Image (cartoon, rainbow, N blue to C red; front, side, top):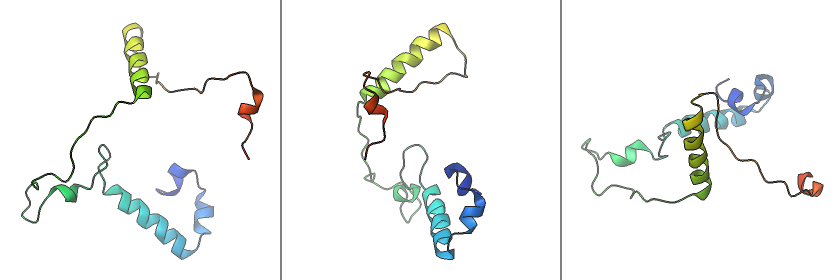
Length: 107
């Protein structure tokens, strides 16, 4: 279920997969768990055979600006000043130009 539930795959369908496909899905899930949930790196890349942090570090931190994230942060700050409800979150909705064909599936 740990593989199926987050993806919305019925467990019965998963059990209908071949042994090889189920094995690959579970192996991929386990492989993905080894990476840091925050930065995405493999912790073992940062530690040498002696158990100490490697020098130089395997990655160099850089700063990127995402204007979408900046807009969401501005909205978050503005909302927190007027309403501190934790049940609200911020996201984007695509602007609608009035052309209904935009909402049709693209072929």
